[in-house]
Length: 501
Image (cartoon, rainbow, N blue to C red; front, side, top):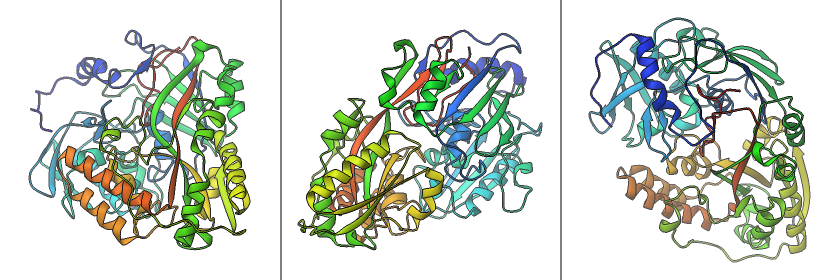
């Protein structure tokens, strides 16, 4: 994508002109008129997942920051999943591995300018982070200032989807001050979004204030008071009693208890799957993986556990990925099922998403009926992730947004199902899968990349290391007097400049 660079104009005028463009990117819940001055009430928001890494932008906490309007990257995703301008107002490709991004005029929340040197520094820190942000799985890049208004990003290998990759929440651009503490990235007062993170109370709460210097115009809310509430029933109750204005991830069991006018349901690219540890334990045996897959009845989960607020699993990509259904290909390489004969297994999941323990309980019953002996483990996600990544469970129930990291359909395959994948909870290492994913990664044309992604999906499904269970629709609780909540299918945004009460 390449756009002409407009003549610079004063920041306030630019911000006012750009505000309508920003608020129209995704479907919103009752968008209203523009902000008037510096008034506005504070928003009270209940989020499901507490910070797991002290709000570092390089891990799972990155989406917390983006959903609250704290951080931004060079690019963003539009409603169709294409790369759109953010801190970069335009870009052009100058070779197989080189891209130049032209920056808009903007400020960090500490008052310093968003300069090419600052952006290059932020991307360099992300590229050197260990572990790397999910959007950089398998990718190396370097960034350097290009004149007064641009940044050149060069990748180690050809990367046709770099603009999509740079939209990942883990590649947010922060000021130099954020990286001052050795080994830690501090987003407090160092980001570029409409809301500034001003305080964090452990894993229970956070405080955000409106950032009046935001390039996209004044936010209509004066700030956000965030509570991290892992219990889904408690989140729904807090909305019902008026203690919060917005409650994310309302459990389907609680949906009927909310007034119809306070319930928002949106299709997302999130798929809940059963991941089978293919490296150790019983599911190292492909025949036992096939037996587990055959034992699962996904229609029971969609109609029962999710009460019709989900679709039965069709693949890694669900109905919200609209191009996938017409390109799906037959699954290849499956082994024949082996009788479990009492094979013992541990099945783990987390309770931050309240349906998952119930899903796991139903799976336990189905697997035991097939002949497995199942031990169920349920904890808070923050207490499970490291063990899951280390392969300490035989099976894991995971709700995963397949496009959250980059918007590129191939990225989730590379990170979750290849030998070098950084989020490979299935511990899968299969040469045929790696080759299929590599072919998809090499495809530059969008249509050919989608075709290659579906071929790779078929290879992954053929290992039976992943059993897609349901494709979720997410229910968000929104107070009757709240307007402008963003219903983002990629689950990267929630509160924007137009959100208010």
